[in-house]
Image 1 (cartoon, rainbow, N blue to C red):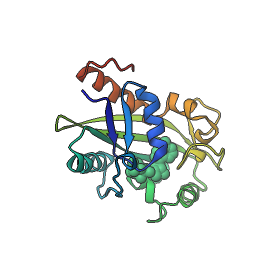
Image 2: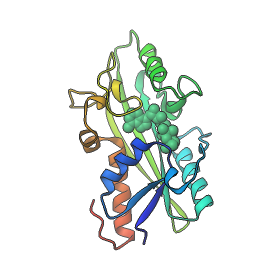
Image 3: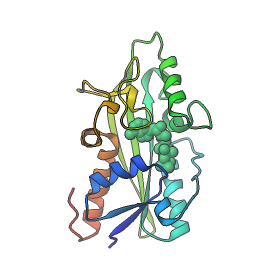
Image 4: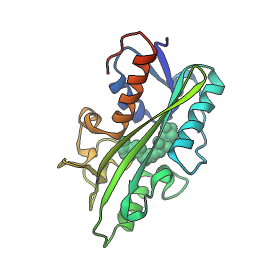
Length: 200
Ligand code: ITT
């Protein structure tokens, strides 16, 4: 029964958002905190395969309980792009601003602005992999709004909201996000497989 779980990510925003869902019972530890400094490869065509690659890579290195997640923004009028290419949509330099520009340019003149964030979490538990999915439906705004969050947050507005993710606090985004939905499934799994009283 772990009191800590390694989160195979280099993205501090993801750590903050997932820790908020998991609560205090389990401490989520980032790669930098355990002294691992690698850019884990994400060579596959699906979020599911990339998430598995990340968790298995870190499990092989540490032998400790660990999980990863892969998230993509899927835009209907762009045939589901950037999707699995979300981090590097405008090139290998992983430039958030250039990625946003490319999505906005691709949607110019298009009526359908429907999109979703989809997160796949992969955990290696007792050496076996389990996956959990979370989806947040919404639309792509015509221009950037807000300074908070990261990645595509300034151009994404979830269904039923009047503000972009970047105009929300972490708590407000966490209440409705794709990552929270997947992390809640992870929490249920941990509760069913441990008895350390974590709260969903
Ligand atoms: P890892 O170390 O976990 O791989 P990453 O930042 O490379 O972190 P991904 O491979 O999952 O993350 O890439 C997905 C990209 O999609 C990420 O770089 C962001 O640009 C974007 N993204 C992911 N989650 C997001 C969110 O909640 N809000 C806005 N953009 C997000």
